[in-house]
Image (cartoon, rainbow, N blue to C red; front, side, top):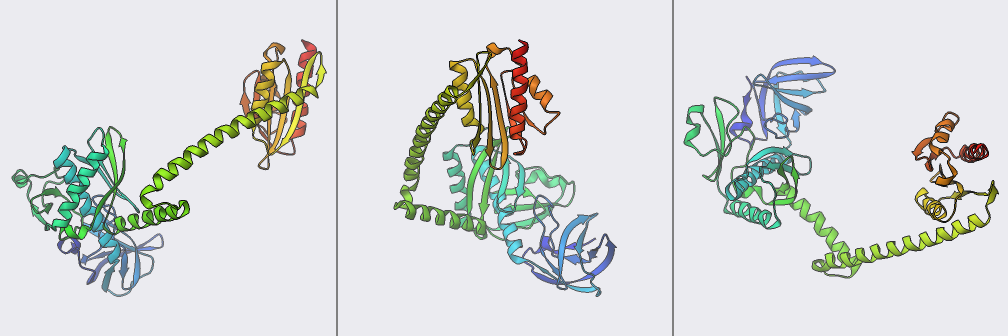
Length: 401
């Protein structure tokens, strides 16, 4: 069984060790050591350590039958090896994991919210707490409480107890093992069964910052950062707010109000623009109607537009359908793709959906619609032929009627 030195002293960065077993499989070497400082990946929700063995990069670390398996790409020929872990990565994991214990303790003590889910992501950390909702005021209260404990620099210690002794301490959650239960204690504030690596005191967490939260499966999912991640989070946000302030010639405390004003102005301009474009396309529709041809006293309107979205063409079609019985066949060469919209008034007794189904066997079409209006996409090369085919079928239907 591998001696897990990271549980005894998580601050060890380099040690000597001995290879006791090595297997070559699928182009990689799977190594067991008599002792290690490498924490296995996702053991208890914590990411694994990064580092090297005799200068060879460790690709993966996992636990198997109480042994820690180290996966490397290159062969290591010596039985005696030197292990080095990436300290910045280890410290980051300890800050996030210890911060999670503290934040979970804060939710439990202040609002009786139990942590039922935990994940350390690449950028952010998440816990799921058994609360129906969380207000801004409650989140702020949690933050203040947790960060006061950080600034008080309470001692963090770990030790083992047996199952029979578990009732002697106020554990926040029940252990998942029956013997050699490892307890991580924050100086009589929080007691939690855990096999992770943790800091020696709360001051090393640095800072806990809740970023946001949302309802998730009946609970509340909290996204937060600790330590160096919190500093990085503050750094990029401060830069963005500062840059926005310079852009708007505004103090950083006033940027939200300025942006809100600009956003409202944009919404108003977009609405006016939409109304004006709608009016413009209605005028275009009237012009198309005046220049249309008539078959059996029914206006046939056809037009191929350049760089016009079907949503705008729909404005024309709806406008003309409201003022007269007509057949409309429109195409658009939009973003290097062909688009079509075919519309016929209800009184003409034409089922365009059936015609679309028939034509689909002759062209590569993506689209659909109703008996009165169909639309979709096709290749630019087929667009004109497709419109002509629709008009031909519609003319035949009108003649039959």
